[in-house]
Image (tube, rainbow, N blue to C red; front, side, top):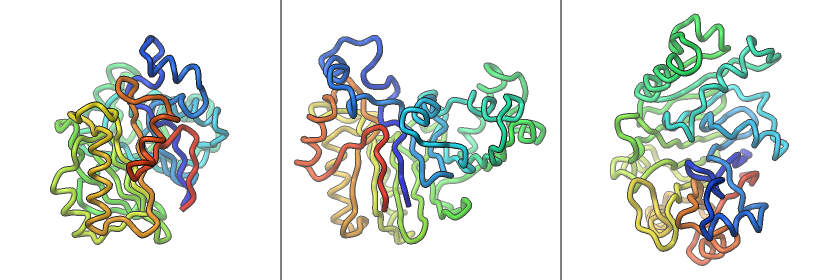
Length: 284
Protein backbone atom coordinates (compact mmCIF):
# COMPACT_ATOMS: atom_id res chain seq x y z
CA UNK A 1 0.00 0.00 0.00
CA UNK A 2 1.29 3.44 -0.95
CA UNK A 3 0.12 6.50 0.96
CA UNK A 4 0.60 10.06 -0.29
CA UNK A 5 -0.10 13.09 1.88
CA UNK A 6 -1.72 15.63 -0.45
CA UNK A 7 -2.04 18.17 2.37
CA UNK A 8 -1.24 18.28 6.08
CA UNK A 9 -2.59 21.62 7.34
CA UNK A 10 -5.62 22.60 9.33
CA UNK A 11 -8.40 24.77 7.91
CA UNK A 12 -6.41 27.91 7.07
CA UNK A 13 -3.29 26.25 5.62
CA UNK A 14 0.23 26.91 6.92
CA UNK A 15 1.49 29.57 6.57
CA UNK A 16 -1.82 31.38 6.76
CA UNK A 17 -1.70 33.75 3.80
CA UNK A 18 -2.83 36.79 5.80
CA UNK A 19 -0.81 36.10 8.95
CA UNK A 20 2.47 37.56 10.23
CA UNK A 21 2.84 35.37 13.33
CA UNK A 22 6.25 33.89 14.10
CA UNK A 23 5.28 30.43 12.90
CA UNK A 24 3.92 31.63 9.56
CA UNK A 25 6.90 33.89 8.92
CA UNK A 26 9.30 31.05 9.70
CA UNK A 27 7.41 28.67 7.40
CA UNK A 28 7.61 31.21 4.55
CA UNK A 29 11.32 31.64 5.14
CA UNK A 30 12.04 27.91 5.17
CA UNK A 31 9.61 26.80 2.46
CA UNK A 32 9.71 23.13 1.46
CA UNK A 33 8.23 20.81 4.05
CA UNK A 34 7.05 23.78 6.12
CA UNK A 35 4.49 24.76 3.47
CA UNK A 36 1.22 22.95 4.08
CA UNK A 37 -2.02 22.69 2.11
CA UNK A 38 -5.35 21.63 3.60
CA UNK A 39 -5.39 17.98 4.66
CA UNK A 40 -6.18 15.13 2.28
CA UNK A 41 -4.71 11.66 1.66
CA UNK A 42 -4.30 9.40 -1.37
CA UNK A 43 -4.09 5.62 -0.94
CA UNK A 44 -2.36 3.94 -3.86
CA UNK A 45 -3.67 5.78 -6.92
CA UNK A 46 -7.38 5.10 -6.62
CA UNK A 47 -8.64 5.93 -3.11
CA UNK A 48 -8.91 9.49 -1.85
CA UNK A 49 -9.69 10.48 1.73
CA UNK A 50 -11.39 13.86 1.54
CA UNK A 51 -12.26 15.76 -1.61
CA UNK A 52 -10.39 18.75 -0.24
CA UNK A 53 -9.96 22.25 -1.68
CA UNK A 54 -6.24 21.84 -2.42
CA UNK A 55 -6.10 18.45 -4.14
CA UNK A 56 -5.74 19.99 -7.62
CA UNK A 57 -2.71 21.99 -6.53
CA UNK A 58 -1.31 18.95 -4.71
CA UNK A 59 -1.63 16.81 -7.82
CA UNK A 60 0.31 19.36 -9.85
CA UNK A 61 2.95 20.23 -7.25
CA UNK A 62 3.80 16.69 -6.20
CA UNK A 63 3.48 14.96 -9.57
CA UNK A 64 0.66 12.86 -8.19
CA UNK A 65 -1.98 11.96 -10.75
CA UNK A 66 -5.59 11.65 -9.62
CA UNK A 67 -6.82 10.27 -12.94
CA UNK A 68 -7.38 6.78 -11.50
CA UNK A 69 -9.29 7.88 -8.40
CA UNK A 70 -12.41 5.73 -8.23
CA UNK A 71 -13.23 6.02 -4.53
CA UNK A 72 -13.48 8.81 -1.98
CA UNK A 73 -14.00 8.43 1.74
CA UNK A 74 -15.29 11.75 3.05
CA UNK A 75 -14.61 12.57 6.69
CA UNK A 76 -17.15 15.42 7.03
CA UNK A 77 -18.56 18.40 5.12
CA UNK A 78 -16.45 21.29 6.47
CA UNK A 79 -15.10 23.38 3.61
CA UNK A 80 -11.44 22.66 4.35
CA UNK A 81 -12.19 18.96 3.70
CA UNK A 82 -14.87 19.04 1.03
CA UNK A 83 -14.81 21.20 -2.10
CA UNK A 84 -17.90 20.19 -4.04
CA UNK A 85 -16.77 22.11 -7.12
CA UNK A 86 -14.49 19.13 -7.85
CA UNK A 87 -17.59 17.05 -8.58
CA UNK A 88 -18.42 19.46 -11.37
CA UNK A 89 -14.89 19.97 -12.66
CA UNK A 90 -14.17 16.22 -13.00
CA UNK A 91 -17.41 15.59 -14.89
CA UNK A 92 -17.82 15.11 -18.66
CA UNK A 93 -19.64 18.45 -18.82
CA UNK A 94 -16.32 20.15 -18.05
CA UNK A 95 -14.50 18.31 -20.82
CA UNK A 96 -12.96 15.63 -18.59
CA UNK A 97 -12.17 12.48 -20.57
CA UNK A 98 -11.49 9.01 -19.21
CA UNK A 99 -12.20 9.64 -15.52
CA UNK A 100 -13.62 6.52 -13.84
CA UNK A 101 -16.89 6.56 -11.94
CA UNK A 102 -16.29 8.17 -8.55
CA UNK A 103 -17.76 6.14 -5.68
CA UNK A 104 -18.30 8.65 -2.88
CA UNK A 105 -18.73 7.37 0.69
CA UNK A 106 -19.95 9.55 3.56
CA UNK A 107 -22.33 9.60 6.49
CA UNK A 108 -25.95 10.53 5.84
CA UNK A 109 -25.42 13.76 7.80
CA UNK A 110 -22.45 14.73 5.64
CA UNK A 111 -24.36 13.92 2.46
CA UNK A 112 -27.32 16.03 3.57
CA UNK A 113 -25.06 19.05 4.26
CA UNK A 114 -23.21 18.51 1.00
CA UNK A 115 -26.45 18.37 -0.98
CA UNK A 116 -27.67 21.61 0.57
CA UNK A 117 -24.41 23.37 -0.27
CA UNK A 118 -24.25 21.93 -3.78
CA UNK A 119 -27.76 23.05 -4.69
CA UNK A 120 -27.46 26.47 -3.05
CA UNK A 121 -23.97 27.49 -4.12
CA UNK A 122 -22.95 25.50 -7.18
CA UNK A 123 -25.45 23.87 -9.47
CA UNK A 124 -29.04 24.48 -8.43
CA UNK A 125 -30.00 20.82 -8.55
CA UNK A 126 -30.14 17.86 -6.16
CA UNK A 127 -26.74 16.23 -5.69
CA UNK A 128 -28.34 13.05 -4.35
CA UNK A 129 -30.58 12.34 -7.34
CA UNK A 130 -29.92 9.57 -9.85
CA UNK A 131 -29.86 12.18 -12.63
CA UNK A 132 -27.07 14.02 -10.84
CA UNK A 133 -25.07 10.83 -10.44
CA UNK A 134 -25.25 10.24 -14.20
CA UNK A 135 -24.37 13.84 -15.00
CA UNK A 136 -21.44 13.93 -12.57
CA UNK A 137 -20.07 10.42 -13.23
CA UNK A 138 -20.71 9.73 -9.56
CA UNK A 139 -22.15 7.04 -7.29
CA UNK A 140 -23.05 8.06 -3.74
CA UNK A 141 -22.85 5.55 -0.89
CA UNK A 142 -24.27 6.47 2.55
CA UNK A 143 -22.34 4.72 5.32
CA UNK A 144 -22.76 4.15 9.04
CA UNK A 145 -20.06 4.06 11.71
CA UNK A 146 -18.77 0.71 12.99
CA UNK A 147 -20.20 -1.27 10.07
CA UNK A 148 -17.39 -2.71 7.90
CA UNK A 149 -17.79 -2.26 4.16
CA UNK A 150 -15.83 -2.96 1.00
CA UNK A 151 -14.49 -0.29 -1.32
CA UNK A 152 -13.01 -1.95 -4.39
CA UNK A 153 -9.96 -3.87 -3.11
CA UNK A 154 -10.13 -2.19 0.32
CA UNK A 155 -11.81 -3.24 3.55
CA UNK A 156 -12.98 -0.15 5.44
CA UNK A 157 -14.44 0.63 8.85
CA UNK A 158 -15.69 4.10 9.71
CA UNK A 159 -15.56 5.35 13.30
CA UNK A 160 -17.45 8.33 14.75
CA UNK A 161 -15.14 11.31 15.18
CA UNK A 162 -15.29 13.48 18.29
CA UNK A 163 -15.93 16.50 16.06
CA UNK A 164 -18.93 18.34 14.61
CA UNK A 165 -21.41 15.77 15.96
CA UNK A 166 -24.36 17.03 13.90
CA UNK A 167 -22.39 16.49 10.70
CA UNK A 168 -21.63 12.78 11.10
CA UNK A 169 -17.86 13.22 11.02
CA UNK A 170 -15.95 9.98 10.45
CA UNK A 171 -12.50 8.50 10.94
CA UNK A 172 -11.39 5.57 8.78
CA UNK A 173 -9.45 2.32 9.02
CA UNK A 174 -8.45 1.10 5.56
CA UNK A 175 -6.98 -2.37 4.93
CA UNK A 176 -5.54 -3.91 1.77
CA UNK A 177 -3.16 -6.84 1.27
CA UNK A 178 -2.72 -7.31 5.00
CA UNK A 179 -1.74 -3.66 5.67
CA UNK A 180 -3.95 -1.31 7.67
CA UNK A 181 -3.97 2.48 7.98
CA UNK A 182 -5.96 4.54 10.46
CA UNK A 183 -6.79 8.10 9.36
CA UNK A 184 -7.87 10.06 12.42
CA UNK A 185 -8.64 13.67 11.53
CA UNK A 186 -10.63 15.86 12.33
CA UNK A 187 -11.21 14.79 15.91
CA UNK A 188 -10.74 15.66 19.53
CA UNK A 189 -9.90 12.84 21.99
CA UNK A 190 -11.02 9.55 20.46
CA UNK A 191 -14.33 8.34 21.83
CA UNK A 192 -14.18 5.34 24.16
CA UNK A 193 -16.57 3.67 21.74
CA UNK A 194 -13.88 3.92 19.09
CA UNK A 195 -11.19 2.39 21.31
CA UNK A 196 -13.50 -0.51 22.09
CA UNK A 197 -14.32 -0.96 18.41
CA UNK A 198 -10.62 -1.21 17.53
CA UNK A 199 -10.45 -4.30 19.73
CA UNK A 200 -13.83 -5.70 18.72
CA UNK A 201 -12.70 -5.70 15.09
CA UNK A 202 -9.26 -7.06 16.07
CA UNK A 203 -7.46 -4.21 14.36
CA UNK A 204 -3.72 -3.68 14.28
CA UNK A 205 -2.34 -0.71 12.40
CA UNK A 206 0.79 -0.34 10.29
CA UNK A 207 0.34 3.43 10.05
CA UNK A 208 -1.68 5.74 12.30
CA UNK A 209 -2.35 9.31 11.21
CA UNK A 210 -3.72 11.64 13.88
CA UNK A 211 -5.06 15.17 14.09
CA UNK A 212 -2.44 17.61 15.46
CA UNK A 213 -4.24 20.93 15.21
CA UNK A 214 -2.85 22.28 18.47
CA UNK A 215 0.85 22.50 19.26
CA UNK A 216 3.17 21.47 22.10
CA UNK A 217 2.18 24.37 24.36
CA UNK A 218 -1.56 24.28 23.75
CA UNK A 219 -4.37 22.26 25.33
CA UNK A 220 -6.60 20.16 23.13
CA UNK A 221 -10.20 21.16 22.67
CA UNK A 222 -12.23 20.49 19.53
CA UNK A 223 -9.10 18.93 17.98
CA UNK A 224 -6.11 17.04 19.34
CA UNK A 225 -3.02 18.74 20.68
CA UNK A 226 0.59 17.53 20.47
CA UNK A 227 0.48 16.06 23.96
CA UNK A 228 -2.81 14.31 23.25
CA UNK A 229 -1.25 12.78 20.14
CA UNK A 230 1.57 11.48 22.37
CA UNK A 231 -1.00 10.02 24.77
CA UNK A 232 -3.02 8.42 21.95
CA UNK A 233 0.02 6.80 20.37
CA UNK A 234 1.17 5.47 23.76
CA UNK A 235 -2.25 4.00 24.47
CA UNK A 236 -2.31 2.36 21.03
CA UNK A 237 1.07 0.77 21.70
CA UNK A 238 0.10 -0.30 25.22
CA UNK A 239 -3.14 -1.89 23.97
CA UNK A 240 -1.44 -3.78 21.14
CA UNK A 241 -3.14 -1.79 18.38
CA UNK A 242 0.14 -1.04 16.60
CA UNK A 243 2.18 -3.65 14.80
CA UNK A 244 5.84 -3.94 15.86
CA UNK A 245 7.17 -1.63 13.13
CA UNK A 246 4.15 0.66 12.99
CA UNK A 247 4.60 4.39 12.48
CA UNK A 248 2.47 7.23 13.84
CA UNK A 249 2.15 10.55 11.99
CA UNK A 250 0.68 13.94 12.78
CA UNK A 251 -1.41 15.84 10.24
CA UNK A 252 -3.98 18.68 10.19
CA UNK A 253 -1.40 21.06 11.65
CA UNK A 254 -2.44 24.62 12.46
CA UNK A 255 -0.15 27.64 12.46
CA UNK A 256 -1.22 29.15 15.78
CA UNK A 257 0.63 26.76 18.09
CA UNK A 258 2.80 24.60 15.86
CA UNK A 259 6.27 25.73 14.74
CA UNK A 260 7.58 25.25 11.20
CA UNK A 261 8.33 21.68 10.16
CA UNK A 262 11.95 21.14 11.30
CA UNK A 263 11.28 22.22 14.89
CA UNK A 264 7.97 20.36 15.10
CA UNK A 265 9.52 17.22 13.59
CA UNK A 266 12.32 17.31 16.18
CA UNK A 267 9.78 17.56 19.01
CA UNK A 268 7.77 14.67 17.55
CA UNK A 269 10.71 12.29 17.18
CA UNK A 270 11.64 12.93 20.81
CA UNK A 271 8.09 11.93 21.78
CA UNK A 272 7.47 8.79 19.77
CA UNK A 273 5.79 9.98 16.59
CA UNK A 274 6.52 11.71 13.27
CA UNK A 275 5.18 14.75 11.46
CA UNK A 276 3.82 14.30 7.96
CA UNK A 277 4.46 16.91 5.28
CA UNK A 278 2.87 17.65 1.93
CA UNK A 279 4.02 15.23 -0.76
CA UNK A 280 5.30 12.63 1.72
CA UNK A 281 4.96 9.13 0.24
CA UNK A 282 4.93 6.03 2.45
CA UNK A 283 5.08 2.46 1.19
CA UNK A 284 3.86 -0.08 3.71
